[in-house]
Length: 130
Image (cartoon, rainbow, N blue to C red; front, top):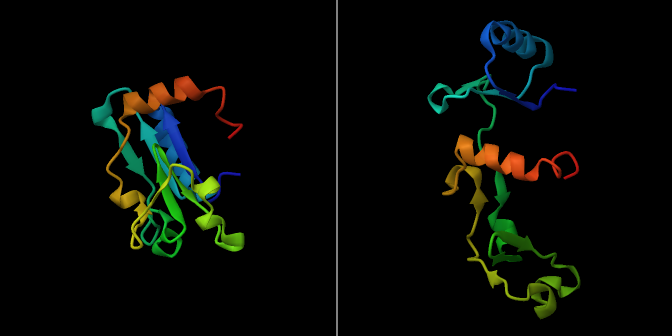
């Protein structure tokens, strides 16, 4: 179940963490383990192995021709049936530059721990049903 996934450990791990993390790395071979402590200065990232990707491209240049920007999100419209040119589907969207990419390594907006905790609290009813 945990093999190849990312694991988030929250709260103090104490001596439990000294056992849990090495055993989890060995037994489940996760993509990464991220440990968050109460003190933001103690945040640690453990388990990234050489050759594993750290960033992901969500929108590449091949999709830019069919991508529109809206406040807070992007929409990639399929080229079939000329949907990417349909004014009703485009609505208020603005076409992105043909060389546009949306990648996690060039993202300018990041959540801090307190922001992430607030988002989780606000959306806890939705988490798991997304």
